[in-house]
Image 1 (cartoon, one colour):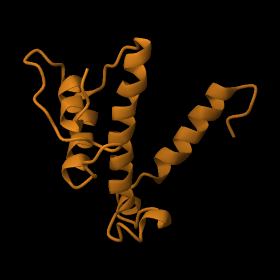
Image 2 (image 1 turned 90 degrees about the horizontal axis):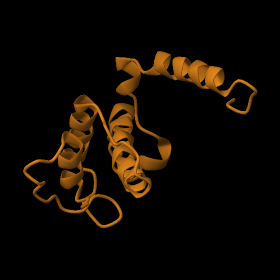
Image 3 (image 1 turned 60 degrees about the horizontal axis):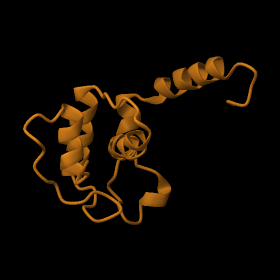
Length: 119
């Protein structure tokens, strides 16, 4: 319910509700039904890690076009990288083959090189 006169309050309330569901037990539950045919062993936790990797890569896709600051906490980058290493597809439109980042690359630029993104 984000269509309100108080969108920030609605967002914070929704976030609290979701955070309460992110328990270790729930993270071990099966992933979304629409993915079970192709990924029957995928857990909710793995699905959320995969979404994080995807969102981080796409944040660069969009942010780099508009000149946005693209700082990301290293812990989030490490978790996203592990999700990709565990088997997210490496193909155009998903994640291309990794390449060597520049010597002076930031942690986010190193993550992007791992996803196949190029400046």
